[in-house]
Amino acid sequence: MELRHLRYFVAVADERNFTRAAARLGIGQPPLSQQIRDLERELGVTLFLRRPQGAELTPAGIVFLSEARSVLETAQRARMNAVLAQQGQIGRLRLGYASSVALHPLVSDTIRRFRRLWPDVVLQIDEGNSRELIGRLHEDRADAVFIRPGPADPHETRLLRLSGEPMRAVLPAGHPLVRGADSRDSIPLALLAKEPFVLFERAVGLSLFDAILSACREAGFEPTVVQEAPQISSVVNLVAAGLGVSVVPESITQLHLAGVVYRPIRPPAPLASLGLAAAAGKSSVIVDNLFGLMERESRAGALPPS
Image (tube, rainbow, N blue to C red; front, side, top):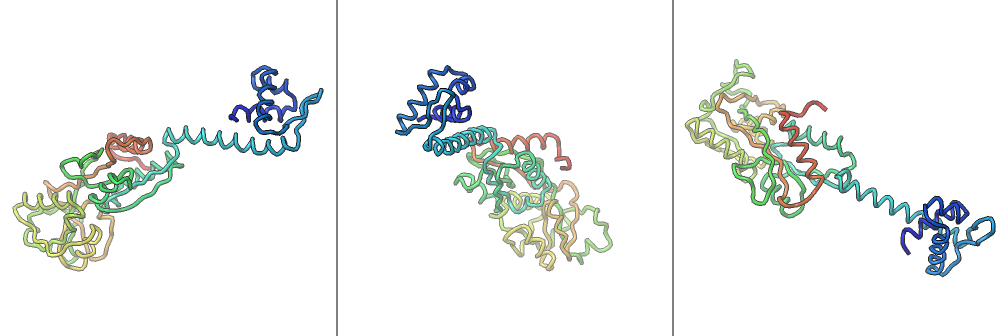
């Protein structure tokens, strides 16, 4: 039994006439009658009573009609879904992001834009550090991830590098560099040379850690790290507790925590890298759509308001 047999049967059942059904299907009446006889022979039942004025469904035909319609509807839905899946209109996107990029407007705007353009794609979003996220890509536990990439591209990874994000100093509210200063005033990084630093663990934010360390060295000092934090958001909490100063990506300044003040760093200020990564060589239209969206928006310079 093939789908065409079901289509032929449904047409005859709808028309109650072999001649009209044949015209509707665009085939001859004798071949249609033969196809229905073949179907009845295969099923071992009589589907129609042939009358001079047309065709009448038997009790077996009435039951079979309901099932035939259901099968045809399922087949049509499967065909349509296959086309949509090939276009990336439906499916699943397992998206990860490093904790330090969670507040970056480009990341949140891109996710919002993606959901609007492809509303039927199911988004599964998870957080981790950049090293963990790259591992998830290669273990097929993530499809695409926003990370803080280092100078070299991760092995066997497709990487779209985005514009670097300026970094800012974060100081306790009572710090001498804060008192009487305008929040827009930039400070030389060298002024923090003798300050205790609070930083996240290098394994958590490899590229950020190295960028901060390199900037401090270029400013003529080696930072004294007195406290490590498990993630970048914890850094701000520890600075608020008075444990030291730190340097964080500009987007982190959206954390309006009592007891801390953010200051721009006078050039040359360190930059926090940002990139979108996926496993190299893995074909996914949904991931391609995400990368295409990011490429268009990064060329435009910024995502316009949604």
